[in-house]
Amino acid sequence: MIEAQNVHFSYANKVEALKGVSLTIKDGEFLAIMGQNGAGKSTLVKQFNGLLKPTTGKVLVDGVETTKTSVASLARNVGFVFQNPDHQLFSETVEDEIGFALKNFGFEHKVIEERVTWALNLLSLTQYRKTSPFLLSGGERKRVALASVLAWDPKTLILDEPTIGQDHEQKEILRQFILQMQTQNKTVVIVTHDVEFVAECNPRVVLMKDGNIVAEGVGKDILTNPTVLAESSIVLPQIAQIFMKLAPLGFPKNIIDIYEAKDIILKAKENKVQP
Amino acid sequence: MSVFDGLKFRKVYSPIHNLDPRIKFVYVISIFVVAIIFYQIIPLLLLFLLQIPFVLLARVQRQWLRSLRGAAFFALLIFVINVGTTFFTSGYSLTAPIIESAAALTLRFVVLVESFSVFFLTTSPDHLGLALEESRVPYEFAFAFTTAVRFVPVLAEEAQTIMDAQKARGLELEKGGLLKRIRNYVPVLIPLIVSAIRRSLELAEAMESRAWGATKKRTNLYALKLHRGDYALIIITVGILAASVYIRLFVPIPTIAQLI
View 1: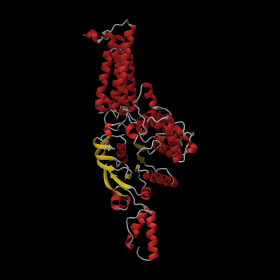
View 2 (view 1 turned 30 degrees about the vertical axis):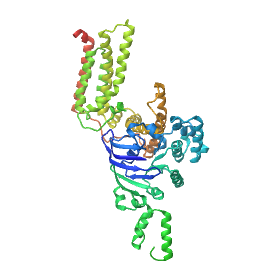
View 3 (view 1 turned 90 degrees about the vertical axis):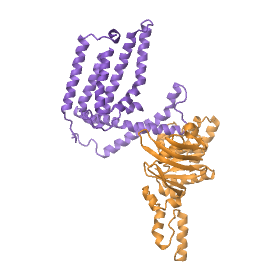
View 4 (view 1 turned 180 degrees about the vertical axis):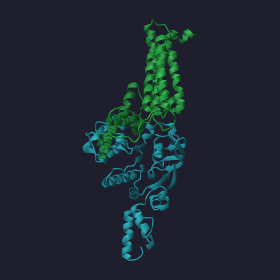
C-alpha cells in the first residue's frame, strides 16, 4: 500500500510541483494518473520509490516512510519504468540489461539466470537474448526496459507513459499484461496522456492539475465528465463522445467501454426504439 | 552539477551583460595572463578582489559564489599538493613562505575560475557565436561551439534522469570504494553518451531539412558594435596589463611575512 499524506514538493529552483497531495493506493489496485504537462504527475510518482522526497508531508510505502530509507531498498518493492528506454539501456546484451537490477539486489547467479529467461519470455524477447539493446527498434527497446524491471517481480509497478511510441498491437499486449498483473494482486500505476488506452483499461483515474489532485474516481465517471476533463485539457474518449451526442435519444452518457457500447447499440437496434 | 551552474547563462540586463563579448573575452584572457605572470600572493589577491565589482555590477554574485564553491575542492587539492611537495623537497620544514606560495598558486587557480565564470555567466551563447563569427571564425565552427554550450544544461538534466532511472533499478552510486564508485557511473555515462550521439544525428537531419548551409554568405540579424562601456573596458584592460608588466619587471613585491 502506498500512502501520500498532504505531500508538498518543491524543486531546487523553488518551483512548487506538488501542493498538498493526498492519495492512497491499495494493494492490487490499477491506477492511472492523468493531467497536463507540468501538472505534477511524474513528480508525484517519483515520490513512491523515493527518487524524490516530500518537502513537507509524508509518503508511506507499506508503512515505511520514504525519507527513512533508500531508493534501492524501496525499489525492491516498487518497480519504476521510465518513459524513455534510452535513459537506462547500457549493457552489451539484452540479457545483461535485464540482469542488471537483479545483480544490484544481490540475487544469486542461478536465480538471475532463471528470472532473465522468465522476463524475456514474458515480453517475447527471447530471440534477442544475446543482441545488443542498441540494435533493437524503439518499441523493442521499450519492452527491454519493462522486462528489466519486471525481472525482479516488484509488488508495485509504476509505468511512466507506457504507450508512447507503441503501435496498436503492442498497446494491446501491454493492456493484457497489466490485466495479468492484476490477477496476481500486483499494484499498477500508469502515468499517461493516452485517454483511449485508459478508456480501454478502465482503471481508477486520478486527474492532476497544477500540483493538485482535481478529480478522482472510476474511469467511467471521470472520462465522461466534460467539465472536469476540459479543466485538464483532456479530450473525451471517442466512445464517450459518441454517446454524449446520442444522449438526446435516451442513450446513457457514461460509456467508455467498446463492448458495453456494442451491447447497448444492439439492444437499441432490436427494440428499434429507445435503448 | 553545481560546477556547471556557475557557468550557466541566465538572461539578465546589466552593464556587464551588454558589453561586447569580444572585449570581455580579451579582458578575461588578460586577467589570465596577469594571473600567470605573478606568483606572489599580494598581486594575486588584488587581482581576485578586482573581479568583485564586475560580479556585483552584473548581479550574478549568487551563481558566481556557487562556481567558486564548485572549484573549492580543486583549490584545496592544489594547496595540499603544493605544500606537500615543497615540504618534502625542501628538507621537511614547514615555513611561512612555503604556505604563502602554495596559497598564491591556489589563488591563481581561483582567479582563473572566477574570471571565466564571470565571462560565461554574463555572455549569452548567441552573443558568443556572433563574436566568433565576426572574428572570422568559420560559421560551421562558431555554430558547433554555440550548440555545444547551449546543450550543456540539457545534458545535465538528462544525466539526472538517467541517474534516477538507474537508481530505480537498484544502482547505488555512493556505494563501495573509490574504484567501485567510478565503475558505478558506467550505467549513467553510456546512456548519456549514446543519447547525445543520437540527438546530434537528429539535430543534423533537422538542420539539413531546414537548408542549413544552403548559402555560403550569411548575414546576421544583429551586428556587434562597440559602445562606450566597451571602450572603457578596453582602457581598463590595457591599464591592468601595462601596470602588471611594469610592476612585474621593476617593482619588488613583498611577501606577507615580510610586511608583518
